[in-house]
Every structure is written in C-alpha cells, then in structure tokens.
Amino acid sequence: MALSEDFLSTDDLHPIDIVETLAEHHEWDFDRVADDQIAMAVEGQWRTYSITLAWSGHDETLRLIATFEMDPPEEKLPPLYEALNRANDMVWSGAFTYWREQRLMVWRYGLCLAGGQLASPEQIDRLIRAAVAACERFYPAFQLTCWGDDSPERAMDVAMAEAYGRA
Image (cartoon, rainbow, N blue to C red; front, side, top):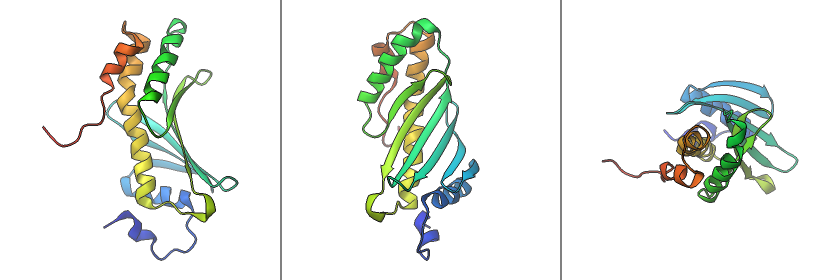
C-alpha cells in the first residue's frame, strides 16, 4: 500500500499531520511539539538523529532540521568548517552547518510549497530519509576531521556516494 493512500479522502492536509502519520508508520519516537512542528528520533547506523520538521504558513515552507551532537576540540574548528564546505559541495539538496553554542551538527532543508501545493507522504518520507542518509554519509568524515589526523580533503574520501544495487 502506498503511503499516500491514507490521505486520499482528506481535503485539508497539514504537512505536520502527514509527518506524524509517517512517524507512526515507521515506529519512530516523536513528539508533536505544536500544531506546526514535530520532533522525532530516527535511528541510523552511526547514531540516532534528532529530526524536527516545522511548517511555516507565512512562506509556505516545510523546514527540516536534523541534528547530532558534536563537540570538537577548539583547534579542530577550522578544519571542521572546511569539511562542512566540502560536504556541502557534494550534496544537491540541503546543507550542513555547525551550531557551535549548542555543539550540534545540523542538516537543514526547506521544501517550498508555494501556491497551496501539497507535499505527498512519499515526498516527505523521502525528505526525512535523505536527511538521515546525508548525516550517515558525512558523519565518519566529520569524525575523522575532528578527532583523527586526516585533513578535511582526505576525510571526505570516506563520504562515498550512495551505493546502488547489491554486491
């Protein structure tokens, strides 16, 4: 059954309602923070990622923020920022940033739904999975940059593109 079949009879879909249904479907821990915001924990291979989605009716954008803790030594911040730039050059949607005060690595993406457009459950599911995939892909490179002896350029070698098929 397609994820969107649950929503076929609904005229007024709220994006966060769709996210809540997806979280229930995937059995992710979540908290409906407000009518326009939901926070959840999604398990990855490397760690559990905190993911927040918020709907802004003002600019008709569904915002996704995926975070994980990272507290690099002070002297490793310049190489980490270089690694962030390199990672962002390797992705097409979303971007990484580091929130130093909160000691959080952040993946951000905004899905514009201007003109009353609706996001399908499959589209939102893909958005969440793409965020986790990006974090999983670059987490080892950020770790090597912050706690290894590798340069950011060399650390990015572990951030291979997503594999297709099976060996």
